[in-house]
Amino acid sequence: MAEAAGPDRSALEAAQTARLRALLEALAPANRFYARKLDGVTPPKTLAEFSARVPFTTKRELADDQRLHPPYGTNLTFPLEKYTRYCQTSASTGAPLRWLDTNDGWAWMLANWDRVYDAAGVNEHDRVFFAFSFGPFLGFWTAFECGTRRGCLCIPGGGMSSAARLRAILDNAVTVLCCTPTYALRLAEAAREEAGDPIDLSKSKIRRILVAGEPGGSIPSVRQRIEAAWPGARVVDHHGMTEVGPVSYECPARPGVLHIIEDAYYAEVVDPATGAPAEGSATGELVLTTLGRTGSPLLRYRTGDVVRRAAAGRCACGTFDAALEGGILGRADDMVVVRGVNVYPSAVEEIMRGFPDVAEFRVHVTAERSMAELRLEVEPVAACADAEQLARRVEERVKAVLSLRVPVASVAPGVLPRFEMKAKRWVRSAS
Image 1 (spheres, rainbow, N blue to C red):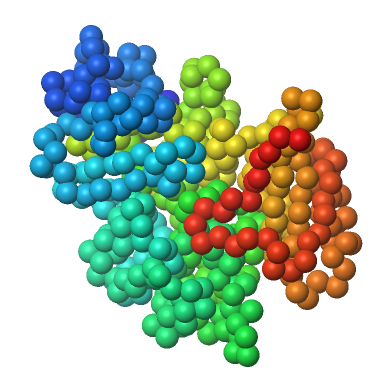
Image 2 (image 1 turned 180 degrees about the vertical axis):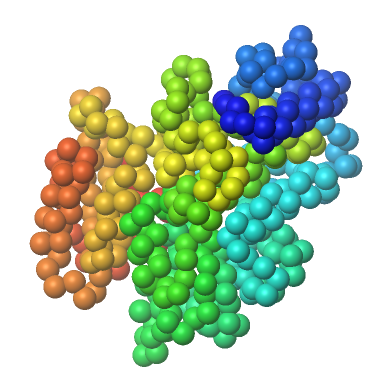
């Protein structure tokens, strides 16, 4: 939970409290989902009271509500005629959640995207390319619409091959690329592979690569690899969720640190096992309350994102917004305990991207005698001179960093899958 850090912080918390009170007063008579959860809860006078009185909201609750009250569930504060936008989650775990927004809720999210673009230094002179397939995933549409509203030339990349996207980036003198960290690397790989006519990314005008969807944007080795592949570009991280909207922006003064947009969200960090507030800068689960999405709100939503909150106070960039060291460290349900060691996908990603000869990788998780075990596959770049030696070096590095002996095998170039959206490199199965 937020801690006071001087008059500016106090003013922010007072504004958050006022917004929370107004939100609860709006929901109680109108929103059937929260009317049930908030029965007997009075509007809080402090943030601490809010956290103590209001129960968590979970994704399972939302999914069950939509299953019992199809198609949209009961977390709607206004009559259905007031909603103008439809999105849904990416369904990385379970069935997708359907999400509706009013014009006011949508405008609130666009204002949050303005904060993301401001921190990244994106302005009306930029040409922004969106390397996405433009399905019903909220992040694409809010980012694109906010870009057009800012006066940027916004270029959609849906329905295009990687090669076609690269040509469009060069032909249109694009200056900002929006994609996942994985796809920024895949585009660079595709540029090298272009048969007979390799694409020279040093000729691109890209100066910012705005990434989201995976923790990679705040992982140093991933950032370095992307920036090496795109000369002159700087990686800028960001994160959000369909359920809550655009949440954070990268600190302009401290790469790899994400600031939560706290005039739009009340943020808490809790122990994933107990739900109690995480002590100090301890790692915990991010819990969010949306302060401006009244039509489809979330109160104390357990995001599943694992974060580490920095000490409260004014940041070097001048803001008092809460800072997350290392960005999103992983997902609570993605952590694997291997022989007593907690392993997050982001830790493996950091190791793998430190090897320039690794083009792609895959992690197999198997349960043996009720214990998880890992094995890795690495695909070398075409120019790698000794694939077996590369596998041994990766194995040694994993052991040194994670204190685990994990078998690593090399596979032929081109064998492992490539991804445009969130990468699915972790494969789980029984032994």
